[in-house]
Amino acid sequence: MPAASPALPTRKLGGTDIAVSTLGFGGAPLGDLYARLDEAQAVATVEAAITGGITLLDTSPLYGHGLSEHRIGAALRRARGDVMLSTKVGRVAEPFGPRGEGSGYLGGLPHALRFDYSYDGAMRSLEQSALRLGVDHFDIVLIHDVDVWTHGADAIEDRFSQAMNGAYRALESLRASGAVKAIGVGVNEAQMCERFARAGDFDTMLLAGRYSLLEQPALASFMPLALEKRIGLMLGGVFNSGILATGPVAGAKYNYKPAPPEILARVAAIEAVCIRHGVPLRRAALHFPLGHPAVASLVMGAVSPAEVADQIAELSAPVPAALWGELKAQSLLGADVPVPTEGQ
Image (tube, rainbow, N blue to C red):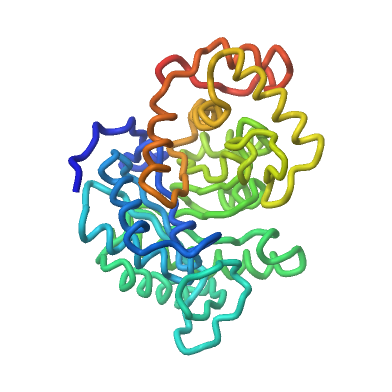
């Protein structure tokens, strides 16, 4: 196994004592999300993240119905560094039930999953995760997918109530006992992040797709609240499902669907500014969210060591301040949107 690379920059996760690398590793693709991965390659990808200086690994029972956790566990047994391990509760595995096709994962384990945001359900979920990963503790635990995207408008009130009266109380007790260092939620909607932030005492939140170089709907209300409450943010989906990585090419994906013409046009305008400053669009998209002081880490998926190396290289390369200035001058970023400073 190669020697560890120099450490990536770290930030404190909100008001906790946890320091996480500004680039985190997201385990969703390791669950055979879009393709069935070779087992050795999947484990090598996690090892590459650890040896590359990434200290935050995030996974979930959802990802491949537990396969992501198994693969990350295998890597940790080979390359256990000073890693902050994050997983999620809200789904419980039923190993003898029919798996079904509702999760969207192409491959993964044959086990069924059911939603369970109760106190006992959260405890059972976490126990199952510990067994898959082969660990005896977690640094960060998130309540997963309590949002309209997942459950629909008719069911969200019941799900939110279940989560706050059940899973939240379970995680509170684990944090109080020292078994877990930080608790939070992982969702796709800034409005739900804000609702949880006002309802409980959370350390961190993982928000996907709602704060990126393309759009910042979380900026107006939720992110100031996160700063006020010292909630450290982990951001997923900073490429908005792909278009900020690929550019406005034919078939580019935005929010998991083909990008509409107005999104293609906006990304083309952003990319033109990046080209004038000699910066790849994907590099600017990686650097931009870290300009906000509430953001601790970007949680990025990868399916090969080369992808991990590319992400580290892009985040380590410079972006001139003039690029952000031109984006604001062209109204492609709002005048009050925070941007990275030199060296950030």
